[in-house]
Image (cartoon, rainbow, N blue to C red; front, side):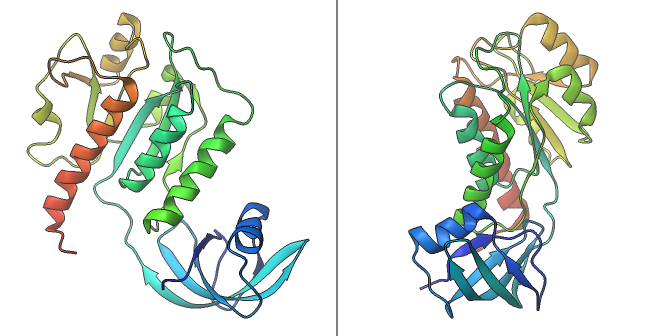
Length: 243
């Protein structure tokens, strides 16, 4: 049976550290791990450690970081995803799937046609969902998650050479974004009502090319998951992945 994972960005070999309250709650109250048991710590920057639980109390959990178990190189090439704020927890769903599929950077944006608007706790909820997905899937790099903002504030932050946005009014064929294998890639998906003409023009100003996803109109979360899955598929082919 594999050891349970906990997120500890400050983990260093030989360090005695206190887990964050949410991680401590999961260890103590959900998994009921006791003093002296072993766990794994992931720092979100490519490293996983073995650790020993040295104190479990109602006020906190302390662990002793031991040896390095596994190290993972930084993702390359990188995928940056621009995803809209959606109602009903669907943006949290997209952040979870982006983490599982190896996305390097996530830009949640506020769109003119979207119903959802950010609250003071939106970034915290998205960040927490990403950490949960990281621990579950075994990945060691936590995606960089930007604070929700209007599209015009986020677009200048992309550093990807390949840039495409899904557009229901048509555009380049789907394979254009993935074949031949691109370097770093940025993909953008619109909200429930799609990108407005002004947003489409703005994206093109930042060298994003419109991309068609086929003859059907996809929901925003379907389109984003579809694109991320295709990218991951091509990434595994390039890596010649063998389980």
